Length: 386
Image (tube, rainbow, N blue to C red; front, side):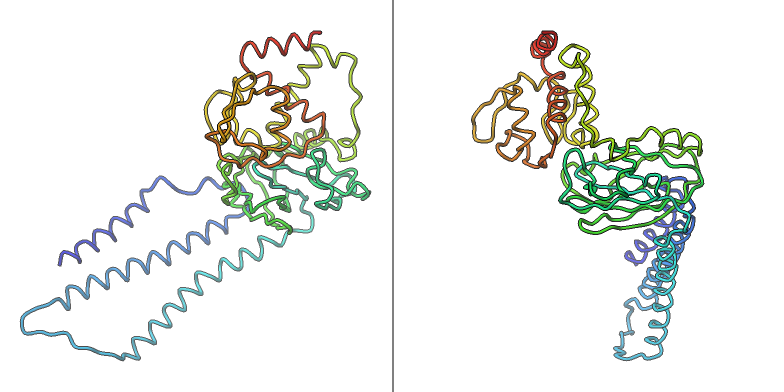
């Protein structure tokens, strides 16, 4: 009898928890209401079976409980009961699978007028690419991936020269326009997920995944990685901004083309002055975000996966083998280009090797220097003013 009461409490508590739970889905901001409907169908069917099975167990415990003068009788075969169980479970499984299969088939079959957005996942950052005026994305290959070409666009493909690149964690989309999302990964399994859109898909190295959606509500939405992709996974976040067509076109017009990113900038006459140093520091700050450095390193002194950059320059670090090293410019350059060469004590050796151009490496080192100790910052400023 005690077990029967416990089961009744579990059933009632589970149903009430579901009804009053604050953990509901985020407000819908796309055309995929059918995703919510499928989830509701799943919850209703599994909920009905959960309640029915547990109440049947309660009935059996009470109806067939031990009493004087009554003994249980073994009934090895009950074909009628077996037939009903087969029919019932088959209908339930079909009701669970069919809606999901129909929704998924539509999820990967985009409308012909959908605009194309490529999402590139890389530990631990997101990059985005749009087709240019020709409406075609350029061909890509891992052979062409460099610090200045993170997408691996083929420089010899004319279709890729006008591709619009978003080398940051934020992308903009027009309101009410279908978007076909093509997802790639450079390293491990990722999953691009924007909860209000109900849209997500794995990005598997070596293949292109796809899905589509239509944003229906203006706003700034967080994009997450929904697959464990390493120690920096919780910080692999981005943003999708949905805005009206005019605002989107103005934002897109400011994006650089692939051809433009491949043109080497001519150093300004004041490159060695204070203004030039400030520009390099700002470039380094932007690189720390676009390259995913901020997923492991903070600039406020708090610990994370890797050492904080605040006060790092000019500090003496202890290595795993017990040796000590001064964090100077040479140290930073060698560590960034070959992070596995030595290991800082207390931190896991998980930093991926970064393929940076000389200009990018200079900028990143300058940014870390600017966050160093007060004496180190003063020395850096004096050097820039000479």
